[in-house]
Image (cartoon, rainbow, N blue to C red):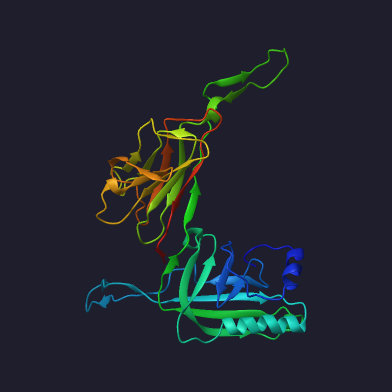
Length: 337
């Protein structure tokens, strides 16, 4: 099974009456034709092949007569083939009739491609994603497991497009590293007792910044949104990526506001950086209290280029003395192969 389950969970699934459940955007689930596989459904996925793999390539290299090697041509991808196996968990003959009827209605012949939506860790970077295709084969063997109302169903799904389209956003939490070398309250052996030296740093030991490592694994550049929760003053965002070639210079983009712009407790500041070609860095904006404030941009506006990894840092002039502010980085991925 793709997601580990206890025996009690399997018994509860078998007691359910229908696989026609709404999509809940949960990991390790898939929906097609109105039925849900995984999660709370009596249809339990055991294997999926073709979603995490790259489709086959058709090459147009040319033979060289009387010479070694080939003349390179342009490569194109073929369509995507997805095969899956899942078990039907029923507790009676009537229950099996019901659920197998839903399976046959969902995974049947179609003249038009229909969407299959899924959410699997590692596929489209864990975002909710979608492909479109048609069922070309469905099989179920009547064996001993079929006789106890737990048949295994195999489905072959063909897509004319090779791409997996990300339809849900990806979010990464900004992390603050604690610096225990900073000043604070120090506990010692003032009572003459043997204790381990301990220092509780002020401001949670925060360094005045929060960092998240992100990678845009899709084929298109993405809009970038950075959210910082108050209380904080002078927030700004720094995006950095390493040089593309050995010996090259790393790229860095910075955007922020003046140090006297404060975000109060219970409020949040949202940075949005568009990726569209031809958009000036000044088009990036900060949203605070329902309004937009101008951004001071140094260099390029931080965006996520296709296939690149970034260190995204949220910096601030000062924060609450109680704890460093929390936040996250979010982006909408494009197509994957």
